[in-house]
Image (cartoon, rainbow, N blue to C red; front, side, top):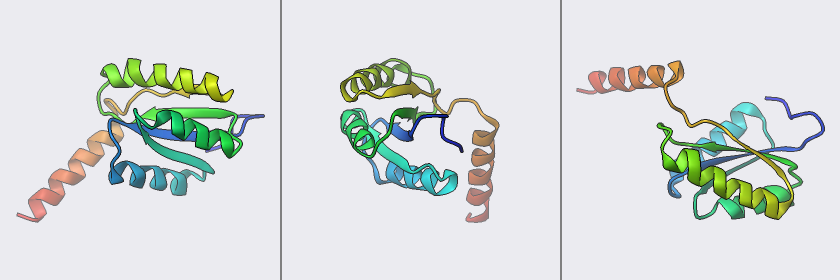
Length: 120
């Protein structure tokens, strides 16, 4: 994953609540992609994640709502919170779509089913 030209990229993986799994996903994302600034946050800590990213020099923050479905949190709440935080910390911001219907999700479901059947 390459930085956006003339920008220092940060990624925030945003979930419904703080959880060690969310932090694990953020760490895995950072290790896999090589993005230097990656934070995990819930809706209550999203602003603090923006602050940490900005303090590390980020000028563009991409927020990924770590949700399966495009509900209110993913489509309204997180984008609104992100826009407010981006303005406060003077950074650009974009919000991705949630995970949704994706072939990669189907592969994960398939792996879970195979694992379940193997352990029975």
